[in-house]
Length: 317
Image 1 (spheres, rainbow, N blue to C red):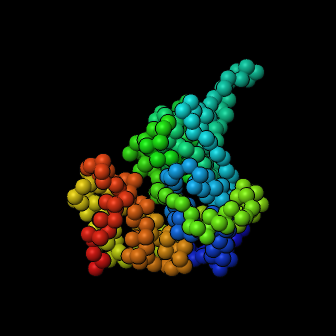
Image 2: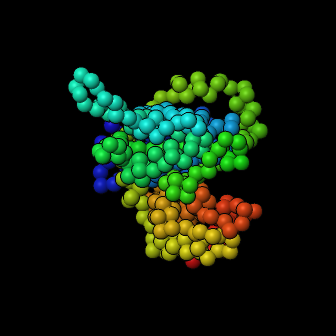
Image 3: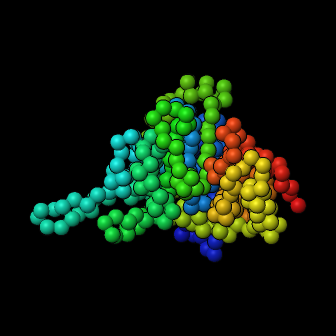
C-alpha cells in the first residue's frame, strides 16, 4: 500500500502523486469541472459527505461513479424513490426458522462509498435513516449498534426542490453534508467533447482504481497536520460570527459549521500541495460549506448570495 510509507503525518511522494493522478482521472471523466472535482476530493479527505444539487442530466451521478471507480473502494448505489423504506437502506432482520433466530441482512449503507441518488425523492422518514450513519459512522437497529466501514463516504444527489415529486431535506440532514455543490451546464468546449467522445459509462467501467482505503485514511490523517495560524482561525471565527449578524439571515452558522469550514480548508490546502492554510482556501470553500446551512429571512434571498455577502463583509487582517 502507498500509505505504508507515511510517517508522522508526512506524505510520501508516491502518495502525493497518486492523489494528483486520482484527480486527473476524475477530471478526464467529468469534463470541464476541475474546481467541483477538487471540492469533491475535499469532502472525502475531510471525512465529510458531499451533496450535489442540480437539474437532471448535468453529471451528478457521473461524478459520483467516477469518484468511486477512482478510489477503488466498496461502492453501493441506492435510487431514492417515494416508496423506499429505511430498511431498504440500512438492512433488516429476518427470522431464520432453522436456527430459530433473527439474522441481520445488512443494507447498502454497509459500504465505503454510498451513492444516495436523488435523495430528496424519498420521504423524510427514509431520508432520516442516514442521519446516524453520516454523523456517527454506525447504524443502530434492533437495539444493536453496528459500525460502518472506514472510510465511509456518502455522495448524495438531489434535484432542485421546485421540481415535482421532491421532498426538501430538513436542516438536520443538510448539516450532515460537509459541502454542497452545483455543477451547472458544461462549457461549449467540454460539451462538444462529450458529444464527440466515448460514452461516460464505458469510460468509468474502464477506469483503474488509483487509491486504496489505507491511502484515503493516510490522506485524512495528513489533513490534520496542515497548519492553520491564529490569524486564520480568527478569520474563520469572524465569518461564522458575521453569518449570525448578517442582514437577511434568519439562522446563521453553528460552531460545527465553523469546524467543518476549517477542516475543509486544510484539505483544500493539502490538495494544492501546501502544508498551511491561506485565507484564499477559506474563501474558495465558504459558499460550498455555508450556503446549505444558512436560512434566509425571505424566500426571495438565496443562501448562495448571502454567503457571498458575508465573505465581502469580513476583511482579511
